[in-house]
Length: 142
Image: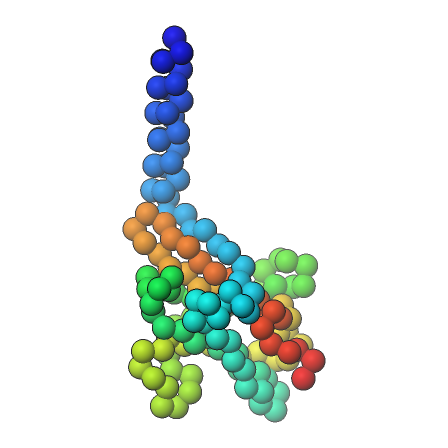
């Protein structure tokens, strides 16, 4: 009887694991500045008269080798999403190296504290992603 229970438990765990992987779930981690630098991600900004452009730069290598897409997210300050948008990689700076991936958004300075990027590496059975909150990377007082 013990062998039957153990075998049944193992089979159920395998079914659950296979089901979870087949849904293509993406595991997300919040990155701070130090962790982002380890992955080769940098966040930059440039202020204009009435807006601020913020962008990420990284190479598709290491943990970011399977990069698929990035999203911009803005919340209301209480954690509720106001806007999410897919970001198309494109050069942000004139003459940027072709091996760099860049994604960017522009907003007003007062919204920056509630903005973030999500960078996703997606494989057939799932993937991982990284959330980079703008407030953790940029000095919002300037």
